[in-house]
Image (cartoon, rainbow, N blue to C red; front, side):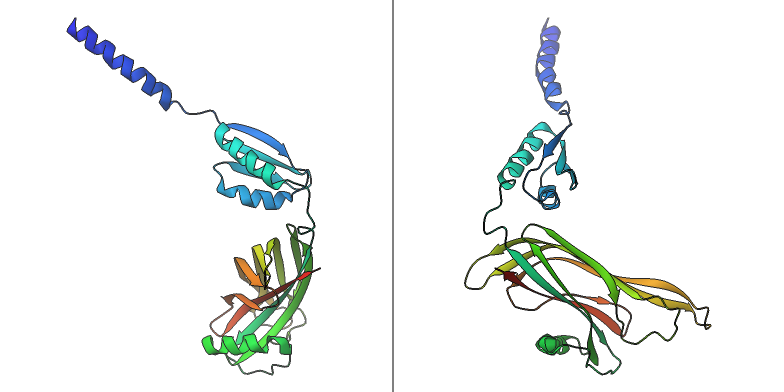
Length: 252
């Protein structure tokens, strides 16, 4: 009898524990977006305990996870998917300078005067012989919207082979928000920059063959309005580096 009571007590304790250990049901839910930018919401929801799949053309987000976590993500979406206010429809103009630095001395007449102060600071840390701006990009976009562009980029020296492919770049970012104050602070999210430079693998002219070397950087940055910020540095080779400089201003 004592053994039977002991076994019964064991099952009374074990059965609730087994019930609690059963995995919760994973489910999915489609949430239609009315006002907010789908890509922006998708990026913000990455911190939640759900899998997030955004479809920008359909203006929809699919949430996959536990019911409680999906409900929490939905509350975040409801708080952010609201009609735009006067502040949120402001445009932000961003200017980006792609600058190459080299250990080889070269004329620096390809550099606009308004970046001289930045170059002076860079020289104190990175003592390259020359600094030249390869390309300048100007983009205007609305707060909460993504901007992107791509194109050709000059290199330090002109191509010696007419068959040499050009250098190219891709760029995208999102203006997350603007903090008002004595000096505005512009939040740039998801900044992604990439460049491709041709490298000769067969020097015989004219049938030279080329491969491409990649360089790039990614960042989330805050920029004081009108102030030039060095986003980062990417080495091209042992003697050459690529810098990305950003400045932004609100266009009222």
